[in-house]
Image 1 (spheres, rainbow, N blue to C red):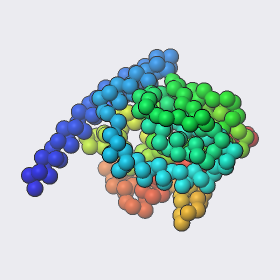
Image 2 (image 1 turned 90 degrees about the horizontal axis):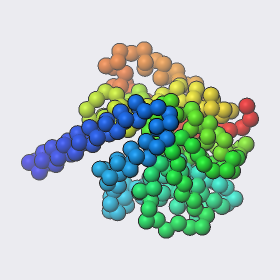
Image 3 (image 1 turned 90 degrees about the vertical axis):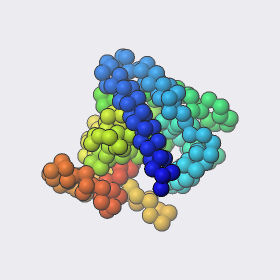
Length: 280
């Protein structure tokens, strides 16, 4: 019992330290102008990786293997041998490297090269260090773009520009598959242990309603949600989820999160987006 209590206390101290550090870094980004943010993204995440070391190999194996295999399984529904794949915010690039085995070319775009410096890179793999907003790959060259837990880290004033840059990178039939947590049952960063809203490096968490509007403004012709059931990806319209979000937000603030955290709602409100470039 004492050992568990000591471990809990150590975790609380570690989370508090990380929270205060993230809050400081987030404040620097949120208070910077657009020009300053182009260099700040890398500085912020370089400092973050210095102070919050990337998981060691055993932790990566335990935490990351399921992440990678699950996402490869999902992406295999969309990828073809002649596809060009783009991952935004690839971290240690485990997913992008796994995808190189089944496509023609892979771009991995990130603000910091630190987690991936020691990688063995196949010939069809290209790591690009960018400024957090731009997507410096050839225009209309990407068939499938993918990000997981990335959009919430982008300054809200940069989000539209970023999505327009992804839109530019996609072929006419290209798709952007994006996974991000829903604000209604957040916060989802380290703030969750201390505050009722994200104050760390989740600079803005979204609802489906907000995100669909953003994607459409960026030029995407179709925005849908999806779930994976028995090996099949099932797409469905955003409208029913937007109605649920609207109803939840009519509740008192103290009740909203409790309702949104019920299992049926967490499944429904988990934001898994498929946005098609198409023609507008």
